[in-house]
Image 1 (cartoon, each protein chain N blue to C red):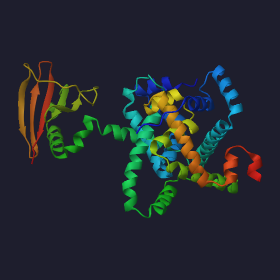
Image 2 (tube, rainbow over the protein chains, first blue to last red; image 1 turned 120 degrees about the vertical axis):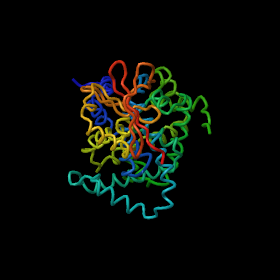
Image 3 (cartoon, chains in turn red, cyan; image 1 turned 180 degrees about the vertical axis):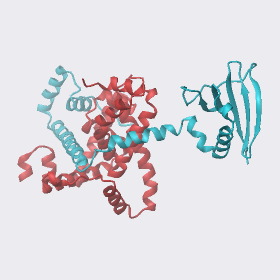
Length: 208
Length: 179
C-alpha cells in the first residue's frame, strides 16, 4: 500500500528514514525543475534541491500538517533559490569564466545522462527551447518567476499559491496576471514566430 | 512593492483561464469572450506562457540523472543534523575532551559508573553515558542540594569537577580554559 504525504511525514517525524527518502524520491524532480527555473543553472539547481530536502528534514518537527507538505517544501525551495540568486549576483563579478567552470563541474558530477535513448535532433531542439525559456524567465523579477513556475509547471491552485508564497489570494491573481503579461512580452523577443506558434498549439502558423 | 490590482474583468478572465471559477461564472466569461476579441487575445498570451513553461519543465529535466539524488540527500542528513547535536560538539573542544577521555581510561572504576553525565562550561550537557541510555540533548538542569563533590581535577586545557547525586548519577563539569 502506498502511503500518502501525511503518513510519510508522520513516520519521518518519528525518525523513519525510509519514509523521508520516499518523500525525497516523490518530489525530487519537481523540486529540481522549480530550482532550475529560478536559477537557470543545473549545478546550482541540483545543489539547492538537495539543500531544500535537508532543510525540510532539519525542521520536520515544526511541520504541523496545516498545509500540504509540498507547499511547505516549495516555500523552502523558493526561499533557498532567492538566497542563491542573491549570493550568485555577488559571485558573478568574480568569476568571469563561470560558464566553462559550470559545464565542467556538471559533467564531473555525472548530472548529464547519455542522450542515446532519445532522438538527438529533437532532444537538441527541446533542450535549446528549454534554455531560451529559462533565459526569458531569468529576466523576470524573482516574485514573478516563482509564481509562474509554481502555477504553470507545478500546477498549484490559487489557494496553494497563497499558502506557499504567504500572500493573499487577490495578490496571487494580480501577480500571476502581470507575470504572464511580462513573460509573454519577453518570450516574443526570445522565440521565433514558429516556436511561439508551436507553444500556442497553432500548427498552421508553425509550418507557415 | 505591491502589484497593480486587477479590474473585475481581468480577475474573472485569469480565474477562468486557471479553472478557478465556478461553472456558472465560467459560462458567463465564455459569453463575454464571444464579444471581446481583446480578451481572447489575452487568454492566448496566457496560453503561450503556459505552453512555454510546461514544455520547458520537461526539457530542464532531460539529461539529469536522479539516480543518486535521494541517496545524496540522505547521506547529508546525519552529518548536518549531527553537527547540531551536543554529543558531537566535542570536536569543538578537542583538547579538553581528549584529555578527559584519556583520564577516564586510566580510571576504570569511574568509567564504569552507572550513569556519567558530562557538562560543558556554563551548563550545556555534552555527553550522557549510561549503559543503554541515549547520547543527545538534555534539558537544562541545576545542581541542588544532594549532590556531593567527589573530585576536582585540573588539566592543561581546563578543569573537571565531579559530583555524585543522591540518585547515584555521576556528573562531570568540564570547564575549558579561555586561553
